[in-house]
Length: 252
Ligand SMILES: [Zn+2]
Image (cartoon, rainbow, N blue to C red; front, side, top):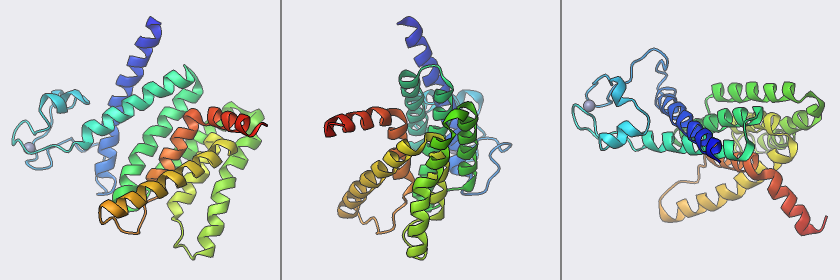
């Protein structure tokens, strides 16, 4: 019991540290800023953050969400992304244990989190994220070569369907970034889980987008990335159980 609590805490802390790097990516990639060498600074007064201003989650809370120097508000996005990434890492460890799968899924979830926020704001998924997930999928394939059919078919099944949709609607029905995302995530998850993830993403996306169009003036334009990401994450963590329960329900 104690080791589980300690390791879960470790995964959470690792998650918030990587989460703070995700914030840097989210703000700088769309602006084409260098995200490796530029020092972190206040967006209002340019104050260069010291190490004690950069402790994930805790610095934001300690400063009450304000810049140490000019007291300008610091976006709540920082602690939200850090906290969410930490929780995702902890859940992944609890569900999948100390395995290669856990490592790959943690990195996948971080990528999905960052690309979702960027897609939500800019309607574009930076292609670098898809290359990164492709690399994760390649590692999965090499680690489980005997199941290669599952992964290769996974990379084609949803993305192939979306390609047809893309050409049939002359590119209006779906974005190229979403197709690549389904191909790379499919390679990592295998065909059963990517089909489930895609269906979940479509359902969640339709429901949330309809609500957003009703309560706010959110336009008809829909960034699919965040919803597909939520579907993929749920499927990766709980998909096997969901499919099992569904088949039992059908009496199969
Ligand atoms: Zn400032």
